[in-house]
Structures are given as C-alpha cells and as structure tokens.
Image (tube, rainbow, N blue to C red; front, side, top):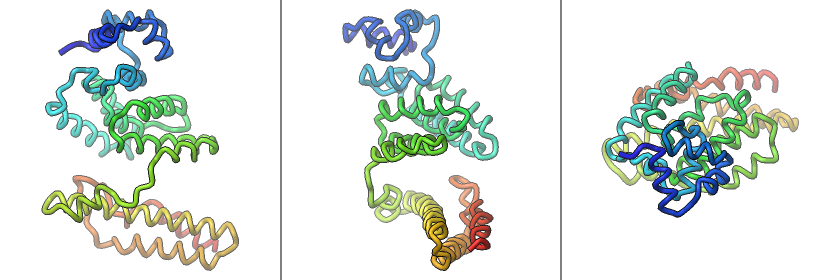
Amino acid sequence: MMKLGEKIKFLRKQRNLSQEVLANYLGVSFQAVSKWESGTTMPDVTLIPAIASFFGVSTDELFDFNLFEMEQQIDAICCEAYLCRDTDATKAEKILREGLQRYPGNDRILNNLLYTMDYRTRTEEVITLCKSLIESTRDDAIKYDVCRMLALCYKKNGQYDLVRETLERIPEVYFSKLGLMASLMEGEVSYEAAQKQKNLAAESLVDMLLIVGKYLKDNGETAKATAQFKIALKVMDAFEEDFVENRWFKSTIYDLQQRDEIESLLREC
C-alpha cells in the first residue's frame, strides 16, 4: 500500500502536472505539496476531498484502501461516535478524528464529523469542510446531507441569502430509499428500513406541524395554530407505548425535546 505522499506524487506525475499546479488549485504553497510528497508532513484533513477531486479519484482510492476490508471498521467508528454525539460531542469528535487517522479523508467519517461541530463557534471550519465534501464526494446521500448541514450553518450564522441557494442543490424526491426498502424487501432488511422510516417520518411530521403552527401564531391565527400544536402532541403521545430499537435509536419520538416548546406555545395561544 502506498503512503499518501507517494500516492499524490504518483497521481501528479501520471498526469504530467507540476507541484505548482496542484498547489494553486488547493490554495497552498508548492513547498507544502513537496513536503507531502516527501512524507515530511500530511495535508490538512479538510484538503483531502479537494485533492481527491483534483485527481478524479475517490478519497478511498487516494489512500489505496480496500473498501471491503474497511467497511465494517468504518461502520463501527461511526456507530460508536453516533451513540455519544448528543451527550458528549467532544468524545464523539475524538472517536472520529482517530478514525480519520486510520482512514484519512473517508467521506462517511467526515460527514459524521460535521455532526459534532458547533456551527457558531467553528463556522469557517464547518463551511470549508462542507464545501469540500459537496464538491468531491461521489456518494449522493452524503452530498445532499452535507448541503443540508451547510444551509443550517448559514442560517445559524444569519447568512440567510445563502440558505436557499444551498438548498436548491438538493433534488426534490417524492419517495425515500428507506420507504422503498420497507415496501419491496422482506425480512430483517424490510423491518430495519421500516423502523428507521417510521421514526424519521414521525419526527419530520412533528417538525412540520411546529413550523406551520408558529407561522399561523405569528400571523394572529391562534385557533389554527392551536390545532397544529395539539396535533403535534397527539403524534408524540401516540408513540408512548412504542419500543426503542437500541441498534438504531436512543429513544422514541414520545421523548422528543420539542414537547416543552409545544406546551409553551399552546399556553401563549
């Protein structure tokens, strides 16, 4: 297996390009590229997707990884980080950073890393990583998830003019892969897809009822707003007797944090 610097040098020479050309594309000095190729230093993690994009290869190919051998290990890394990212984002980020040391530039790990980063205190870092992943990843699911994250980052930082522009990059889809898997597959595959889609759909419904209710409330239509908030609570209450599949979820939508917000909004109507 080639080291990263050797791989960059191989790909550059294969295409008969100078270090200056690659450096200009990445916005670094040619000395930096020289140090990478000699193994003196490593590129910053945020540059990995851009380097892969420049050479027209996947990040995994850039590192000469065998996809079949590393798939389960990356699953384990992302799953371990997921289980603690809501309660301890610092720990989750550490797990993912260590994963990137083993699998530098891996799209899935970088995608998960974005979930651990504070969009207000690390705005530029988030935006840079989002843009790099959007342009370089070959996985549409990652690309569009990162578009969503970038739009959320812009919104949290008051850059509303960039929110819609970013969201326009996401295609409108009237069905989901999970929904189709649940309907068209059988057994464990169908069950897993149905469980995930059920919870995602319920959370989305509560979110949409809140948005509609707030709009109506702000426009003085308190009766209609009240109806939306009550429906949202009924949806959540309907899941009181549901059970948690610990493999994929930490709680049911009965325990969503929006409950306090919805009850407060109802008191205001």
